[in-house]
Image (cartoon, rainbow, N blue to C red; front, side, top):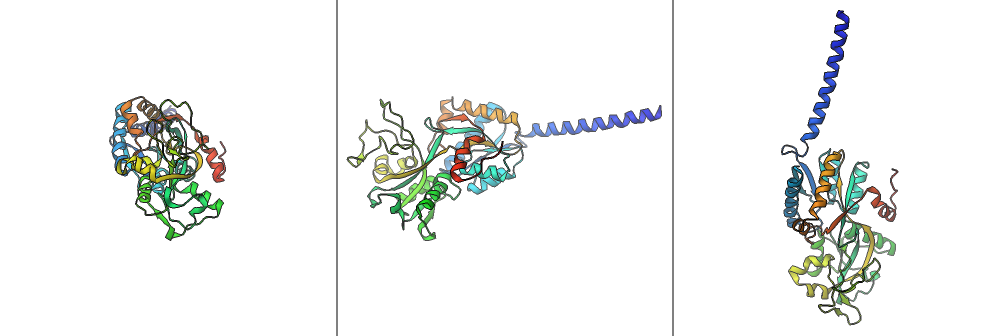
Length: 343
């Protein structure tokens, strides 16, 4: 009798211990997204830092209102820092990595990153790199860039650095340290070009929006300045016939004036296309919390006020989102010569 009681006691204590660990595990998970342990939303420094920080805070507050989750927005210093922050996280970090950055995060976390939403910009889930130059510079082709000063934002940038570097390699172009200006952000690159700190810059490109009443749709391979620049007369299309420019040049319209920027700075060539940046969740991020955040962000794009924040050219210019998985980036992996993961 005594032995049986002792055996039962041991089993009971063991069961309580297991239950205790389970309770702690569940309790610990519930603590993520609270005031004491907020979720971290990482924001890349691809556009205007001040606007990113302010807008990120407004989005985080709105997500809290919709989900009850405490979210702390963090503006990362550079692309490498964001990759490392993802890699060091454990169940509490998500963010908005650009294309190459996402692949870096995938590699650093051994595939323990989950992309859920791709950015959509004016109906397109892809973008490309554009080479911007002074129209009066005498530059006629990409090969004319030899010996010129190249402005780009960051070595981790897909459109600013990675794609142009692939093209330079293909054409045999090289730029030494005396012919490079690293600006720190896409708008800084365009500002540097306008201030004659270099001969050309590379950064994100976006398809032009056709003028009102035009039923044509731009597709990759079309003139990147279609509806913007009249190549026959070598001048801007007049208002009414002109479409809307939403590429990197748009970030300088408020400072320099739209007509001035578009008259002086043209698009020499494009490189791409590549899939857009995304909403991705870091290692061990709880699936139920992912779902809440994904649903809330989708709802924000149905809210005119929040959609305006997301689509600000000084923020990330997202006009919509679409569901994705990691396979969304396989085409870009092929372009880079990177193996496609086994799934």
